[in-house]
Length: 121
Image (cartoon, rainbow, N blue to C red; front, side, top):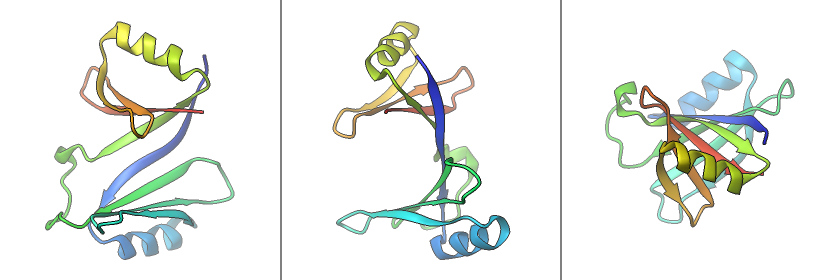
């Protein structure tokens, strides 16, 4: 089975400020956006022509202070061509820490506690 890194997530306190920064500093522009029906979050994916790797910027309405990395509100995602085999492997390893069947994704935790998202092709 093959794994391909596809995006990194950063939760941001001020979405527009972050979008402006990434556009100016790195030439990353918005390629798609998902807004919760209840307005509780906005997810914006930014990228450039240099790579198919994306940065996911997530704004949460209820966050009333700047983020502290100790909040662990970030993850690195990997796409697999054989989701079922990957899930079996990670289940055997005992490293699955969260599953969201409705979204068709799950997360594994590395030895240091970092979460890694596994998504199907």
